[in-house]
Image 1 (cartoon, one colour):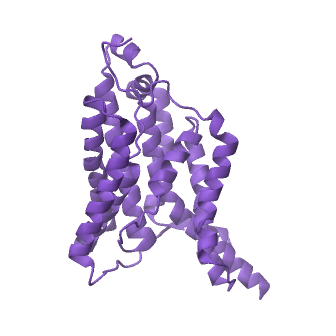
Image 2 (cartoon, rainbow, N blue to C red):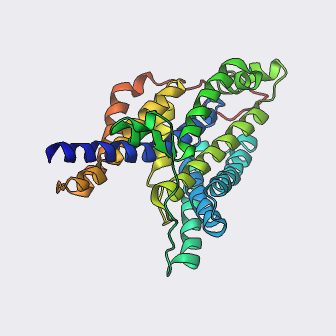
Image 3 (spheres, rainbow, N blue to C red):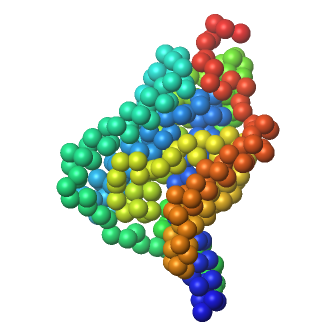
Length: 311
């Protein structure tokens, strides 16, 4: 009996951990791209909420999760345009605008949800999974790690592609230059504002996809606040990654496992207060920040508006 409970606990912990980690990776990857260009995107949570709502509505009406993920990405991108216009071109304070975007998107989506679904609270069917041959047959671990929705594997491909992109392409190098030496980038023929625009819009799209992933695959529904601070966690992961994108994956996996601990403990019958378990990811972030935050990599021009006349 003990062996069965252990197997159920581990399988649930791994499977739930992956489902919880994937949106954090999407958000963290987007934030890392934005920060490398010099824009601290504190509106990430708002972009995720917008993506969650738009993706839920799209999937509810179309029946396609992939279409919902795409629409969620577009919604996040649309919200990011406010960050682009105000911060990149009008040189507004990035922190103030980011907080305002999060509050605004949270309020608007809550209002829309209340107007449309406050009486029915529709749910989506469980998302299908893609099982990797052979690997998914590994006892306990195989089901938890290698039998997931295809978007799980897609985000890992995106992380690997982003690593190659920053290291081997001109646009990737321009994004890094926009965050470290924007005036040098312009002297070399680049356009810092255009480069930052592309980076922030990319971050918005990825955040929107991450938010949609939470609503469509993780929860199967949309309720106000469904992202539960995932965007803020993504910001922390991007900062602590120190420019190494695979660290975002590792950090998201660790936090994802702690987020899924509540469900895993309930399955084996342990009566532990849910609030106590749900504090674990945030306590973990505080500890990690305390230990590693001082050495975090931050671009030299992060949060600094670009003024071509200033030197």
